[in-house]
Length: 83
Image (tube, rainbow, N blue to C red):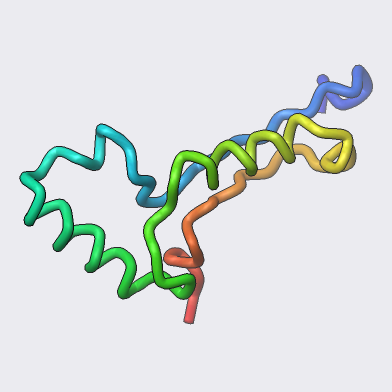
């Protein structure tokens, strides 16, 4: 509340499973199994790519989100949606 009058917005990005070196810790077969398991539970049917998170951050940095503050955006392909 103290930053709002200065037009400073505070938001966060909390991504789900994103294909990065951090998630590539398994051997190739183990990695394929892990990604397939995540894709099966994702409503979009795939794991995330770094570009998916980058697009979310670009949106937050743009004027399109000028009225957005105090939010946590979760680019996760819908994995955390309540069904």
